[in-house]
Image (cartoon, rainbow over all chains, first blue to last red; front, side):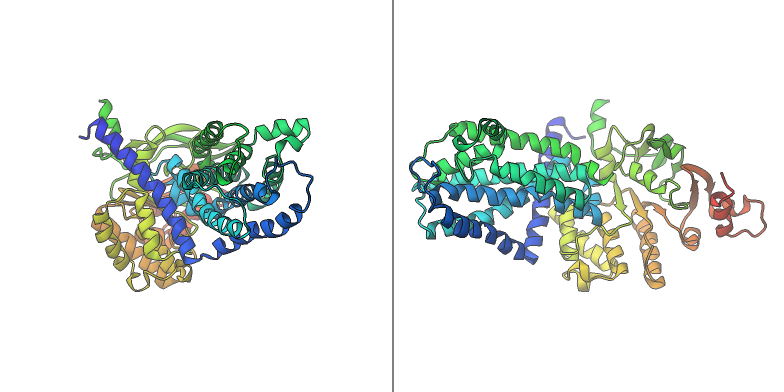
Length: 267
Length: 259
């Protein structure tokens, strides 16, 4: 008979194995058909080249002396991760419609491990976007932070952002249950999340009520920390530790909540 | 003893499924009502019933996918609600819909889904080639599953659902939409699984000859209740018609006049 301690070790191991199994499933899908990664890379590219170039000619945005292209680069990275993640739940609706999700749910895999695996898979997609954005902003002459550790921090923020928003999406998918309803809600969520953040302009430019809203938006903290770490000579508005704490605890809370709600997607 | 409750491989005896007054209501509709049945270890048990009789709801409850609104059940020796993760460890389920990923190969599907059951590398190494060969999929193991025929897909799903050697395998209409050759090969596989591993099989079907040839015992569900249960022979002699067929039995219990 197994002792409670070795049983706990077994459970931890099982949690990790099943989380990685979901990640592996997604990685193998991308390996068979990587076209999704390419098409995802194009959107941030267009934002930077078109929107960025036009708006950097407009001198009215108070970026505190930072060139506008520099200012928006971390915002566009955060945005492209957000857009990918916020629609990620639709793949779970597809899995519900095909019946694959039933196979996840009748397995002994803990629900939280299943959703964490999904979150990591969203992170994997976000990494490819990060590579593209970095290549483009370097070519465009954005003044990057010389410290490699800072960019490691950016990477962690990208993964946390991908996890939080993809799980939020999974939560919405579990409740919406159909692609049509989900797409409607997804479109509805994207705009306020993106524009009520400091991705494209500083929060100080917003009217008072919108400033309040933006402080409840995890993207605000994500962009603040990413801007601080990605660029040279930036000062964080809320402090890096606040940013990481907000995003980290929001992501953990989302794993727990999504894990509880996930199975209701099939009923 | 508290620890036995946590022990993953608790030895089990007695019926593999025992439900008592199991019920599921959807608002006013009773999909499954006050259902008490036993399924014996090692038998092939068939669940018949017209569409909407409550078969799918019963299977969803027994596979832990949907909680009952009242009543209790033990599955593979574990309490359905309090020990649902233990139940999941000991059952396999092939849903009616295709539940494998068409954008991956058969081998990849097997490898990934086996990991959800925490099978060891050694187990994977022996069981996957073995399952592929039993399912006659060895030659196409690395092709994408979306290129498979219906029969091949079905075999793959059965193979994946039994890699962890469940005590009990649920099959929801395993042969619907298959040609006669593919159906016969699925039946053969089901028989083989019972023979090789002593697996109990719980299946639903709309094909009476399938139920008759394959199943040791049959339950006919009607309006959320078990209208009749027994061996095919018992059921046929139980409706008061001489030389009754199972079709007649089915109509007797599920026809428009039955209530």
